[in-house]
Image (tube, rainbow, N blue to C red; front, side, top):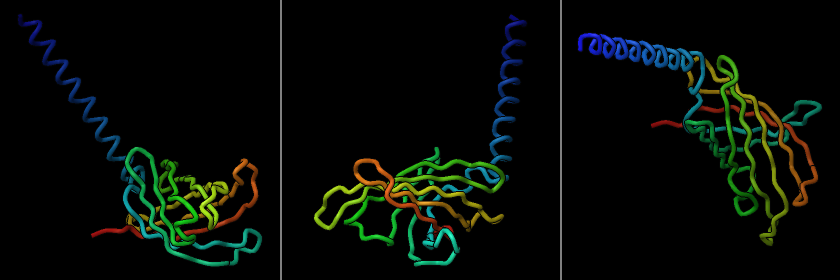
Length: 162
């Protein structure tokens, strides 16, 4: 009976240490940037000339990074009747850096499906965790899957809060 109590206490102590290390590791990962991008962001998107870096046009968007690595993007850059919201994934890469990718479906004015666009960006979260900048590409595909256009963009974002 005494041995069983000792074994049980050892198991409880071991479980406590493992849990403590896991929680500590998660907290340290968040301090270094992992998961800190979660939330809703007000984003100013700039479509840029890939060769010169010159801004072609800018518009606001709203992007939500959710726990578990999913992302939803809504933009004012194109009328909503011509595209669906972007849906995709994100991942913490290193330190305060993140990668995200999302896809939306495109339609013409007669509501016919015309293809889709995939946005890929690399983001850098500032040390406060309340703003980020990103840059990346947009690839637009025809309904048959053929690439019809490449573009570049950059963003400046601030956390949307209460």
